[in-house]
Length: 65
Image 1 (cartoon, rainbow, N blue to C red):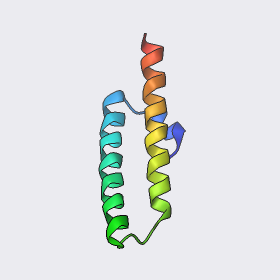
Image 2 (cartoon, rainbow, N blue to C red; image 1 turned 180 degrees about the vertical axis):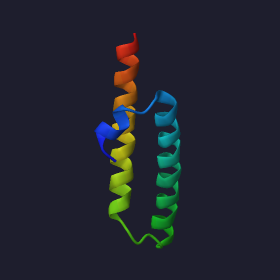
Image 3 (cartoon, rainbow, N blue to C red; image 1 turned 60 degrees about the horizontal axis):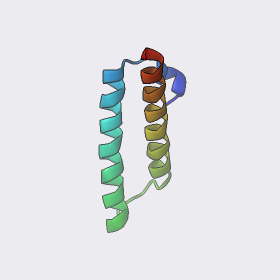
C-alpha cells in the first residue's frame, strides 16, 4: 500500500481500510501466539500501513480546518 494511493481515498474509505488492517493485526497476533504465523514480515507491513493511514487521515483533517 503506497501513500499516493491512499491520498486519493476519502476519509470514510480510509477509516474502513484502517478497521480492516486492525482486524488483520489482531488475527496476526493470535496466529503468532499459537505458533501458526507463517509470514512474520506481514506483521510489520500491517503496522506500517496502519501508521500511513493514520498520518494521511490527520493531514486531511488538518487541511479541512
